[in-house]
Image 1 (tube, rainbow, N blue to C red):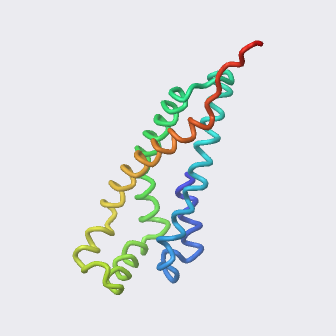
Image 2 (image 1 turned 30 degrees about the vertical axis):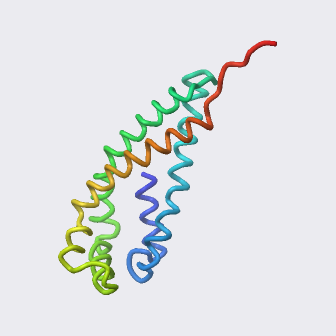
Length: 148
């Protein structure tokens, strides 16, 4: 849901059409809400499921499960985004990459296709999510308090 809302934001900022050259830079800021979601989810898991105590392994496993769920939903999110929210985005990226001589037309059409974006989003969500889970779990781990 957050990624779909982010796409509405990107489109409103013009990063899918008139300001498409800025897209590659500004799309990376999506990492901030994504990491925030992991922090909130793992903090909630620590407090409400593990009763305030969570090892790195427990946090990492919980975050990895979240990553798998997000990755499983990401192709559907890409379909919704590119079909209903910003159907012109892929064609605009093809045109930009050919115009800037970054790719030949055949390469651009292959790379900027819905099927490629759906597959790429699945693998990126899984890999980035697992790395994020590992880091966030490290910061949110909490050992039981020992009595002195």
